[in-house]
Amino acid sequence: MSFEGFAKKDFNTFLIDGLDERMEAIQTRIQPKFQEIGSYLADYLSAEIGNEMYLHIAKHARRTVNPPNDTWLAIADNKRGYKKHPHFQVGLFDDHVFIWLAFIYELDHKSKIAESFVDDFEKIKQLPDHYVVSLDHMKKNKIKLKDLQLKDVERFRDVKKAEFLIGQHLPVEDPRLTDGDAFLETAKETYKRLLPFYQKAMGAK
Figure 1: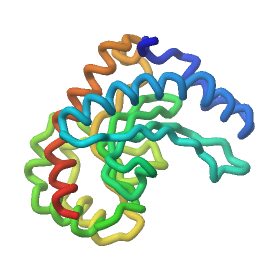
Figure 2 (figure 1 turned 90 degrees about the vertical axis):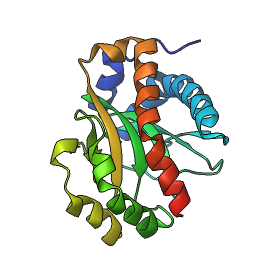
Figure 3 (figure 1 turned 180 degrees about the horizontal axis):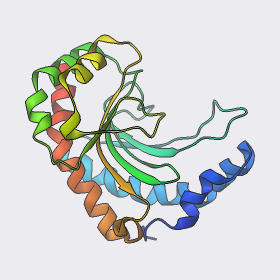
């Protein structure tokens, strides 16, 4: 079975009331697609990086009351987990899909990695204009790359809970989302552009 794209029903998952009901929809509608997408992209990244990369699919296990507003897959070089490591993500909210290179607050060696991005700020700004940055993986908010400021990267370095995710948002109406091959090519192209920053981060640890 190959990935055939996202459907309106996938995004409507996040309109379902109740933790158990929404989690069941995530598990039946979205996670099988994440398995297909993630297996393909993990193989791609393993070949590009020259090191085995492992797929992790968010379980939302800590949630006991509030249903998740988004869900994601992560690909990292660690088999046991991804949150403490630089990693790649694909995921969705109710109105868009995100494709990220992600550095979240649990990251080991965070200040060293962030300092390397401060040094490389001008290279980050040379990424395509339609790329975006998130400073909090729990929120939909994004910063357009052209509006990213050095102080945003310095905050990632200096504030313990600060995060840095960079990549693309594809709105729900983007035709690539319903075309599996087109989406996978978009994800691969995004990761290829971001790989130098992943490798820089791995070298900074």
